[in-house]
Length: 120
Length: 107
Image (cartoon, rainbow over all chains, first blue to last red):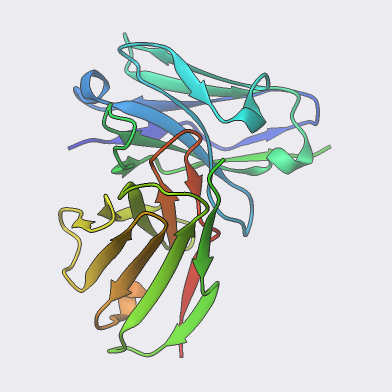
């Protein structure tokens, strides 16, 4: 059974950075891509980017290029998303989601979500 | 980017009703369309993948159809646990994009 366990809630100041982790259980990494999807309060879902940990090269939505970095640590089966230059609009729940390694594979397992609040 | 448009944005229905939600893509995406259900405070849950394939463990009252640009999610007989928000998502090309969501409320 696949489990994705995310790090806890964060409160950050505007202009700072945040790094959220997503630890996968078992052999998930070998046959998975991990994406990050965020959801602002009362809003819809937004795909930020993803990575296939065994290959290591991330893919980003244009909107987040340059401000978001996704990395994977195969030794701990953990994927990270770091967002820099935080602004109030980055306040959201950040989810990691697992899919197969084909680009068309669906998100079949999700983390529990991590609330990031950006406030002065 | 491919734009995904869902309709309606919200719908009120009763237990036992049949409900259909539509999703339109701004360009053809083959059958690479997935449907998710989200309840308040919870992560989304995969219901349907590749337009019409039912995810394991999902009740058979959920079904999906369509290809190209027009897709539908149908719930044949609403149950109390089905009241939630539903999202479509295209998996044809990066960046993946979601519809704005359809909130299914109790009448």
